Length: 259
Image 1 (tube, one colour):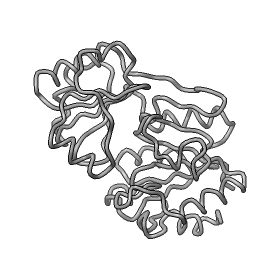
Image 2 (image 1 turned 90 degrees about the horizontal axis):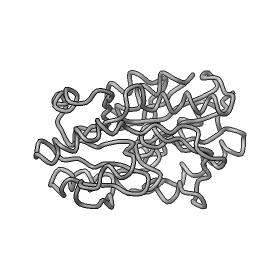
Image 3 (image 1 turned 90 degrees about the vertical axis):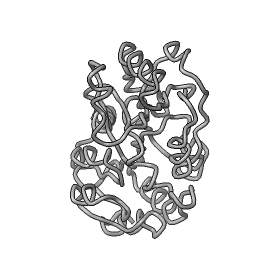
Image 4 (image 1 turned 45 degrees about the vertical axis):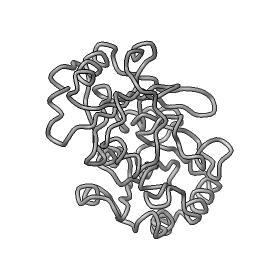
């Protein structure tokens, strides 16, 4: 019996085509929660830009959010994991971005800061939705940064890794990677959630579609890759379902007896 289900957002709950949550997904998650399964978001997004359907009062009731790839975790009772990037590492990345080595978006609790509005960032926004970011990084250190989106090609991450002492990166698409604290990521957020609720890994299921979901799959008893996921993600999952727009969540829930 599952006691918790962890969901990625983009490409898993929210469609890249419509930028909405399918009705079948809303139905499936409502049934799961009514059956006593905790619905937990595990996302690279911040609390600011979680889809409206997943916000308090939205169409889907959520028990907890593991934001910034697990660096800030909270539920209705408060925050249970808070792990921002170290200031010296933020400073190093900001320096490189201001030197024009690559573009970045700094993700903080109350705002996003963008180095410049480049074609590469614009292209990503067309896929996942617009990010309301402030231009300029001069005030970057006045608030903790939990994650940095670095618009850099796969294989070139050494540019910032050589300058930072306590970071790692994860990637769910070709356009950019997420810089997070070393030892962080969705597994760290899941571990914190399991401890908070007294749940064992084999009592959990996770749903995802991106490269940053592969490590999450290894933290739970069962895992589901969405139909549009890469081969690597599908190989790592217990089960491969259809695309989000083709009732992928509903079909997976039926397969695992969650409906």
